[in-house]
Amino acid sequence: MTISLLNRRAGAAATATALALAALAGTATPASASGRATAAPTTASAPESAAALKPAAPAAVSALTLPRPTGPYATGRDTLFLTDRGRTDPWVPAAGARRLLVSLHYPARPGSVGDPAPYMPETEARLMLAQRGLDDPEWPGLVAATRTFSRTDARPAPGRFPLVLLSPGFGTPRATLTGLAEELASRGYVVATADHAYESTGTELPDGRVLPCAACDEVDAQPDEAGRRKVLAAVATGRAADFSFLLDRLTGPRPAWRHARTIDARRVGMAGHSIGGNAAASTMAADRRVKAGVNMDGMFFDPVTAHGLDRRPFLMLGTDPGHAPGAGDTSWDEGWDRLDGLKRWLTVRNSGHFTFTDTPVIGEQLGIVDPGAPLSAARSTAVTRAYVTAFFDRSLRGRPARLLNGPAPAHPEVLFHHP
Image (cartoon, rainbow, N blue to C red; front, side, top):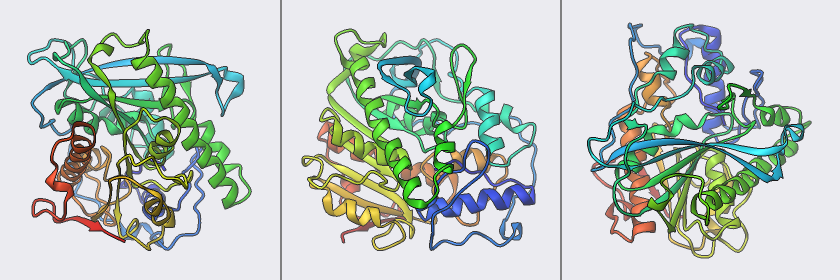
């Protein structure tokens, strides 16, 4: 699924909103790199015209910023470019070996020097926005320059920390999970967020080359819904192979990361948004090193295995009503029945498909309002941070997490389901 911001321009707004509402139902296929979109049959209806939008009053925007992390640690960030020479890229075989770009956020010592880590390259921001019909010439620079709270070259905090793997939505750059990554790092986790080659609107390599979304075009090329679902299932299982390779390179005998000693390889979890959430379950099925998983509003194109996940914990966190029991995405009902460990099924009132990413924060600062997802950026951030962190605290650290026991007054938007 792709990121979607609602533009002030009527035509682009209608297109973006249609994509967002289809994704909310959990049954849309993503737009291609060329801007086309194909949607599966869905109970959600796209607005008939741009008149359904409620743009905020235009305001001058000089800088964008992510919410400040709330944990006790400062945060650092490194970037790795890895090549898996044991696998050929599944989307562009002529490109050779499979490649990954990985952001590593980690707990750092207070007062660490270093420049603020950049949010994303401007080229990636421009392609991401353009694919969604958002052509304001100032926005790519603003989005690319979004302020983060991590420092490059920061000294890691002493100790060893659990590792959380993060996987973004289909067609979406890894940068859009930066806010969650920084929060987890500030609370004592090493976080590895991967861009999967040819699965984003644009991935800029260290040498300046930009990889297009060939996988998006492969989805578009399918003649029917069954074909599209088969390709998207392959995305999830391919990402599982990516993360197994990444774990080898982070925790193996010759690690690729300079601060790999800070990782406690016995405590590894994974979370993802949209197809990345499906990939979390697929990775757990393929690799027992991953001890817990979180799916943030993603359809299980690759179903949860019939024998479960060997009693490992799993959290399903999604939109309401789109991902409530018996709603449009039946793969969650089927997945829930197969999960055999500690499990939680939570949905969030007034949320949208991108609630669990940086999209609400960035969109709100640009003066963009989506009436289909009225939950504020502040509440979107608070809910996502609270429940994902609580789940990993309980699953990887064995800490009490009362937040997972039932409804909480501090988070009235969150509904617990026990089908």
